[in-house]
Image (cartoon, rainbow, N blue to C red; front, top):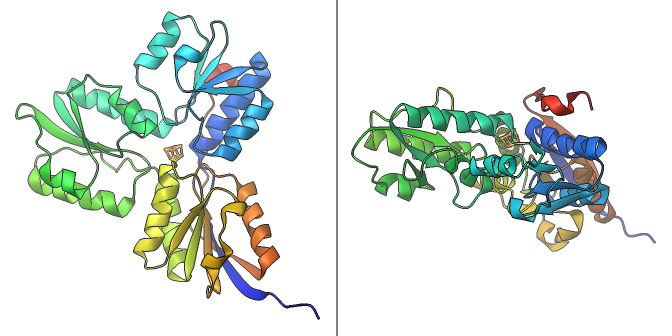
Length: 316
Ligand code: SF4
């Protein structure tokens, strides 16, 4: 007699997965491969997802940590997270053909940082140490004119230079709620601090966090597909946990611990901005092998954002 599988209701968040910046960055590498032929070098992982990186490697992309490893005469793409100014300057000096896949919303923060420095401000930058986006933004301004604020503790203790006005900017992929608390502390301590008109946390990060909050409230656990070094994916797990349900991050279906789902009859499922939809289907198929799965998509904001490709690739 066949053993019947336990029912598992999946609440799948929408929007989830690829954002317009990730879509554009991947397309830039693909079009560069079509235009120049393989190999095309990419400085850093184009987006934080192993599946995406491996797929592009299979098409002829070569990923390197630094520009020094790009041979002369081959094209190079800069990742969606943005790069310090010194990187394109170095590429120009070497006569390299380069394509900048920096997300336009990250570039916007770079321009804001430049303008604030020009107008004599010192910047408190809310972000995570070591993240490529933070390194890229710090690399837009002279050393000593920007200070990193990682958390509430930093916000309470940061001592900015006495001279000049103060402003804050943020990384694009932070937790909306945590960042609001940090900004509140900065505003309390420095009432004249200047901030962006609307926060720099991007639309994709905010929408995915709102969507995961919604499914977390109706689920007993939440599974997030994404890389451990993908900032926006890690934030999705944290947002789910803030709603009082356990959250887990998995890169691929084979990382799912079925034991963790013991007693769970309604599971929330979402994917970070750098995780493709194919991985969501892989997870659903994997779960269907173990449970009698029913799927329900919970629709949030309808995203229609599309970013233009660099002019040199538009006709490719
Ligand atoms: Fe751009 Fe936001 Fe996507 Fe990052 S998560 S690439 S900032 S749209």
